[in-house]
Amino acid sequence: MAQAAAVAKHPRAGRRRTGTGAEPRRLPYLLIAPAGLLMLGFIAYPVLSVFYYSLQNYNVTKPWKNGFAGLDNFTRVFTEDPLFWPTLGFSAKWVVVQVGLQLALGLMLALLVNQTFVGRAVARALVFSPWAVSGVLTTTIWMLLYNPSTGMSRYLADLGIGAYGTSVLSDTGTVFWAAVVAELWRGVPFFAILILADLQSIPKDLYEAASVDGAGRLRQFLHITLPHLKDAIILSTLLRGVWEFNNVDLLYTLTGGGPAGVTTTLPLMIANTGIEGHDFGYASALTTVAFVILLFCSILYLRLSKFGGDRT
Amino acid sequence: MTAQLAEKGTHARVPAPRGPLPPARSRTPKRERAFDDVPRWQIYLPLGLYLLFTLVPFYWMLLFALRPAGSTSLVPWPLTFEHFDKVWNERSFAVFFQNSMLVGLATLVTTTLIALTGGYALARFDFRIKNGFMLALLCSQFIPGALMLVPLFEIFREMRMINSLGSVIIAETVFQLPLSIILISGFIKNVPVSLEEAAWVDGCSRLRAFLAVVLPLLRPGLIAVGSFAFVHSWNHFLFALMFLSRQDRQTIPVGLNTLIGSDSVDLGALAAGGVIAAVPVVIVFAFIQKWLITGFSAGAVKG
Image (cartoon, rainbow over all chains, first blue to last red; front, side, top):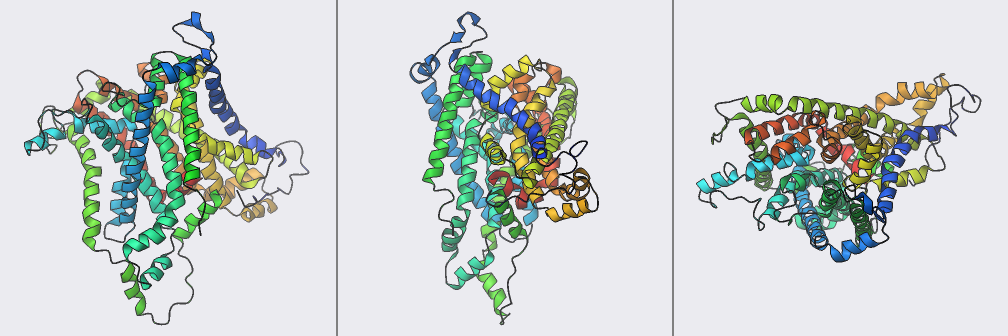
């Protein structure tokens, strides 16, 4: 918000104090009031109440135990809960693998459809289309592909690849990559769209100058394209990382956190504890922990990647 | 930040002024070939492979939805609509579709209206809490709906709104708002204030001037923000799952989840349900996709 906003004053603003024309001094507050109130009520208040409940014993099924708990919930998270550390580990692995692969594939895809070729508009529309697909619909589609009796594996086995009746979703060895591929399918377009938008803002002259100077395509990519994309990449990976960490739609429906809990992320665990286990106090403590971890990682990431720095 | 980046986005579309053309014009095409001479197969081969990865899953869903149960043919022939009939009528997707539509359209309207007023305030006024409000909007991007489930559930229970579509509409609107406000304020900033001032001088009130001068220019932006709100709420699963337990109040994603979770999954019905879930989103996507790449996405995430 570096530039000063244009403050426009209506000619009659000062004179008319009553009636329809609210004077500019009060008007902006009136205009942001609906959004502000909604966000106070349904974002700020819930956030505060999570912090409050995290210090309480609050379980709908055990009302006799409700009351102040101090830091008991947090002690339970870090020392007693056998699920917490593996879940956190899986969350980290999920986020890193997803964001890394989505970025790599999205970058390649964006570079491809940024070229001039016949059928580009159609190709763009088609490769970007999974962007609009929901987590549950992704699960639906990949359930059809993965199902052991009539899915892909049957036709691959017909060709002599793999065995009949392979069920990638119930094998703890394959379930991770099965889920990763499904999420990649709808996650890559996000990066591709963003990077493509940024690619188009690189002045063509830079490439012309570089090729006159004899730089090959790889060197042009490393010295012109990548530095230009840096901030966009940092910000989109961060947002996507937060999003992948928090997003539960796909894993909840595709694997349900299983088999044997190997694909449970922290938010999935929170949803299970809070909604199915009705242990709101403990779920709130888990939520608080997740908040702190997210905040810490986000700040660390922005610091380490020197966001907004050395841009010429 | 938004404005700067938005400006950058415009540059992408409007070719930068090049200055005088080089005297030896014959050399220009050669140079262009020099930096744009990627062999065709290096484009079409990887693109073809990626298209396969993108489209086979869609085809698979259509295949299962359109071929008779028990068939293993790789083409949907003979064509059948029995799965659609079953899902729409027996599995009450007709009701889910109606609920999802209602939630999607209501979210679209409330989000756009509230974001319009908020965005206008941010674009046209300087006021004391402006920077604080902007910061709150940006920070809220990091607050996940999933982690807010428990307190939101409590709030809606106290408001006696569990099992009312209103709870989902409110929740979706609230989480759509920050991004929409940032986007719309960017769009309004791009409309010169002088246009509005001219209308005021002609005797228009602020509201009339806004409706007559600014609003028509905002159309593409409003379409994008509205589509985004619609697609999001149409797709969103968790709020509907948690706040709506009565079957006649459920939405399409929850209905799909029920089909997925049943003991012996009826794949034909599941595929048909998937197609029903996909159709509105595909239509909206086709509508906005060209525009998505130029301005909207840049503003959307970098806001």
